[in-house]
Amino acid sequence: MRDIADLTGVDDPAWPVVLEAVENGPTECVVLPAEPGACQAALLQLQVTARSLLGAVVLNSGGMLLHHGWLRVYGGSGDAQAGMPEVNGFPAEADPAWAPAAGLVVAHDVLGGEFALNGADPARFGRPGEPGQIVYFAPDTLEWETFDGGYSHWLLWMLGGGLEEYYSTVFWPGWQEEVAALGPREGIVMYPPLWSAEGSGDIAGTSRKAVPMPELVAFHVDTARQLG
Image 1 (cartoon, rainbow, N blue to C red):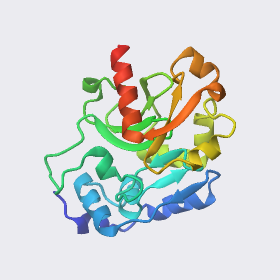
Image 2 (image 1 turned 120 degrees about the horizontal axis):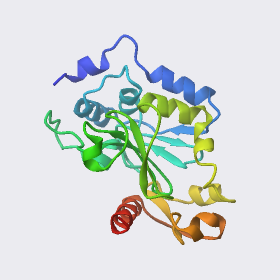
Image 3 (image 1 turned 30 degrees about the vertical axis):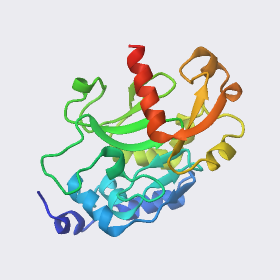
Image 4 (image 1 turned 30 degrees about the horizontal axis):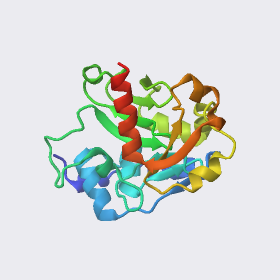
C-alpha cells in the first residue's frame, strides 16, 4: 500500500487541469471546500495519485456542484454534502484489502441517477462496460448505461458543456428553483415516476417532492429489482 506522500507528491498534479475546466468551461460549477485530513485519508484508501483527475478531486475538494446543483460530484470530504467515503462506505481506517465490489460511486444527480466507476468484474453485478469505465444508473429506464471512457473523460465532458446535452430531455420549466431549494443531501422524487410512460411523457406535470438521497437511490434499486 503506497503511503500518502507517494500519492500526493507527484510532479504533474491534475488539480490545475480541473480548475481550468471549471473556470473556462460553460458549465456552472461550485467547488466545495476540502477538509485536508479527510481528503488525504480518502486518497489513501483509493490508492490513486493526485496525477489523476479522480485523485485530484478527492484530495482537493469536498465535492463539486455542477449546473446549479443538478449534479453532485463527490470529493474526499463531506460536511453538509456527503463525501465519497460516506457514499461508498469506506472503512474507518485505510484497508488494502477493501474495495467497492461493484464499483466506486462518483456522483449523483438530483433525480437519483448514479454515476459509478466500474469495478474489476462489472458483469458479475449486472453492469455493462469494462473495468474502470464510467456507467450510469438512469432513473428514467432503471437500467445501467455505459458512458464513453473513464473518470477523467467523463468529468471534463460534463464541465465542458456535455451535462446540458446529456440531461436535455429531463429538465422541466422552473427546475432551477426546485433544485436550489433542496438540502445538500436531498434529491427529487417524481410521481408518476420518471420511468413510467406518464412520467416521462409529461415531466413538468409530475408531482415532485424532496427526499433524502439514499432513500431515493434505494427506491430506484428496489423498483428495478421488482420489475426484473
